[in-house]
Amino acid sequence: MEIKHILFIFIFLGELSLADESNVNEIEPKVRSIIGNSSFEEGQEGAAVGWTFTNRQPPIRSGSDARTGSYSAYINLQNEGKIPSEAHIIKTIDGKLIGGLNYELSFFVKQIKPGTGGYIQQYVVEWWDEDQQAVRGTGFKQFSSKIGEWEEIVVPDLDIPENVRSVKLLFRFVTGAIEGGSGEAFIDDIKFIADDSSEALIAGIERKVELAQFDVALSLIDSFLLKYRDDPKVDEIKALRDRVNKFQQLEDSLE
Image (cartoon, rainbow, N blue to C red; front, side):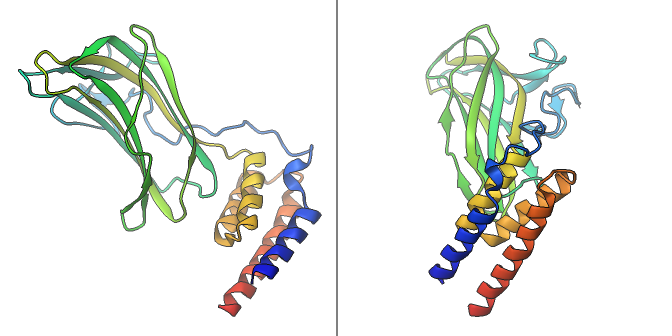
């Protein structure tokens, strides 16, 4: 089986060399964020459409400061005695993900004053499958931000696992169990982006074929043909799709 894979990959790379061609369309390098209401402009009072604000001292949608637009999410933690305070901002994105591409998370934070009582800021990215089970995640990752200035936090190269249905983003702001613990910050313009330029899709197709992940390769090919119908590589990609289909059928028949 390995010999067949190697032979197919050799033919694939030798005939196409798609990613190295200079006449590939240079469409915008990254698509729009797949997060709706990414800057909290839609909502009523302290609630933002499509977002969950929760925990002991939940954030609120606020019009008192914003990086863009008129609103942002506002976190204001104040310990009651030695009881720690905590705020979560949660977004679940369902069914808009493209397997085989890397994603990038970015957001802007403006910390109003230095936190006290062990105050920390964290994010988590979790991938979920069709059965609503978490299949992979970043774990809690701490980030810092400037005092009194909007600062962008960028988390690149988030590799999407196979058979993913949704992704959950969680932002956590928390103090320690210390009297007087506090933290105050704004967060705005949260984006979750996949690079689905023609170059990235072709590179992803090549990578998945090399790994013999033909289901994912075919999905990427379909995405390419749907998005880049006028690309000069369309005919070659269609021909590649036929070959990948045949090779997958051969592989299935040998199982």
